[in-house]
Image 1 (cartoon, rainbow, N blue to C red):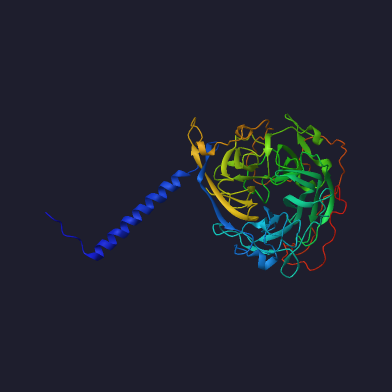
Image 2: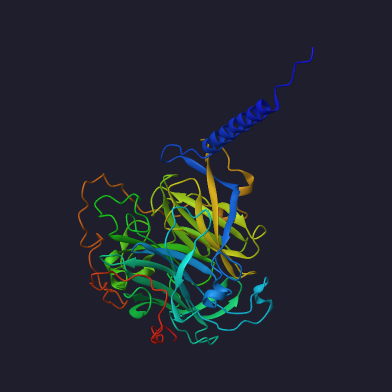
Length: 475
């Protein structure tokens, strides 16, 4: 017997209800797929979740930087908080013309480095809109740290990471590498590295005097400040005030060295004598005593705390196999897990420089910037992790081709968790190692200017750029 069909209106209502139920089930399943297990649980990268969110650089990008700032191509894009704003720092930068295959044509207006400011949105799901860029004239992004631009002498000066310090977190510090020459892909020579600082919102930069030699294990760095403005909710070592210490991850110039580790009191980041290096069992003076924490090859890297996954996350490039990889650890000192593949250069041609954001690290999406040499643009990216059952093997698509990347930490210093404290006590030293003499120069850290209104990351700086690093190694 044929059942009578319900009236059309009832059919539409029924269809809406069914679609709603399907959506609810799908949402529940999707949430369950990334539900956070107990702290210390194992995770696997969800390769299918890796995606480009938005281009941040160039003509037609979210920020249309070609028209607004004369920036058609640039790379890197590491980030740090400066007061309530986010700074995003870039490397070698070029003007017109725009090009899909960027270096297939000649470009004008080479600047070794530029910087943008961002008012952090509630969510980065639509990209990161620039509040502005430091400029030296209307519509032209300013070179912050001058370079000689002479191959074999000083080809360029590139900031490898930044961090803000001072009472109001408005003293900006950029560690730069002075590149003698780019030789072959992934390999270059340095004349040394150092730190420049700004106390006026990034308009002008001064040489701090901090120096590392050409063959330093810390020619390129990434900063982590547990409990500080870039990782405010992260665990802090026992007996240490939140934000009082900076961990400095270092690699030599290029992309083929090991990862070493140092720490320094946050108020002495420009004082090289205050650095202590991990020697496998203790923090000691003298960079020569630093041992590998993770074996190379390791390219550009970043580290951030993620409160959703209850893990510190390290992302880096494995240059020889073209893999952007991710490691996890319970503490910034490790032990670091074997690497897992987030993306490859097959997915994103000539991709490099994965830099984790200093915000939005409390949900299942992991946000990071990534460069591509083909387009010479920086994009905002995202990925996710998924719980891994105890004893389960990693999915084949996240296992690196690189044998060294499949290794876990070589050595991991202790990081005892601090008990919750009602009111943190400011640290006076930030290091338990006794003071010792070193051959590195001692410098006075920059301090923020005491004003009624703290400096912000300016969007214009019409005065001529001061020669900030005239005494740079090899410069």
